[in-house]
Image 1 (tube, rainbow, N blue to C red):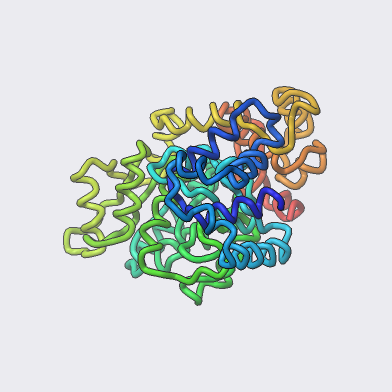
Image 2: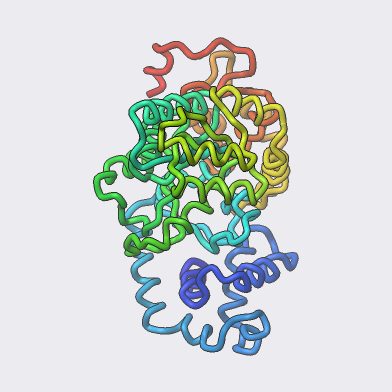
Length: 396
């Protein structure tokens, strides 16, 4: 039994129970080599006697549930999904790829099912959320603001819902990709009409969920999904929202985690703007231009940026960096091959010889340190001219 099978059995037995995360963390930080921590943590717990489970806070019968026929079926179902595509991943709480910012929320998921580029989870993100039935102006703003954030190097994160979510995703598929957090299993799509959009998001960015393959949409899973959107993001921007809106839940959860919340004002007679007005009255920052959000983040007013930078430098990597040059040397290698005209992510992979899991956090760290910028998917030394249309076409 490998670490993924063991993790899935633990998930079936405990779900997102806090005792499971605490136990995995304690068993995975006992001085073992970085590359083996995740596997050893889940293996140690799964093999532990019932008394250890009960001492950790597990309910009676949890250990038996981990070896039940239902757990066998879950493992089989996920294995089929993993084998269907090399970009299908299970990222557990103890894994190096688990995003650091998400750990800070009140009830982080014990595992994530990811379709797409898992390294995107570590990139700086701005959430755009809002009404499922926005006004035409609201839909246009969602797309325009999303493009502005993407051009500044941020990944736009949303929930794949109709309206504002879909507009934000569609506007940022390629630069530098977008993240969709769903309330279903990764093999399902809700709403069904967004199946093509979901595939495009996975191709250029990532589709993320806490629910295993086969999980259908249920009403209670959508508010739960919103905590992941807020937890992955440095800031949440609400475009349009009525008084009773899931976007307000996302905004509240973001504020409770200490992230910045921005709301766009609207006309008093616009019912879709009343939720935004309520957020502003409750302390959200009024924003009428995407530059205001970007300036707030770049000025360092978000403590989350500092936490993200610290996490990158201390990040345990499942592909041990100890076997090669230290991270600073890897960064200098990237800087040397970047060139004055810049390069796309795939070009840098080829030139540097690094893996995706190693290159992505290095680029993010260099962006946060101000050494380079990203425009339309091209990484440029800070102060260079923007990429030309011919250069962009050549990179595609």
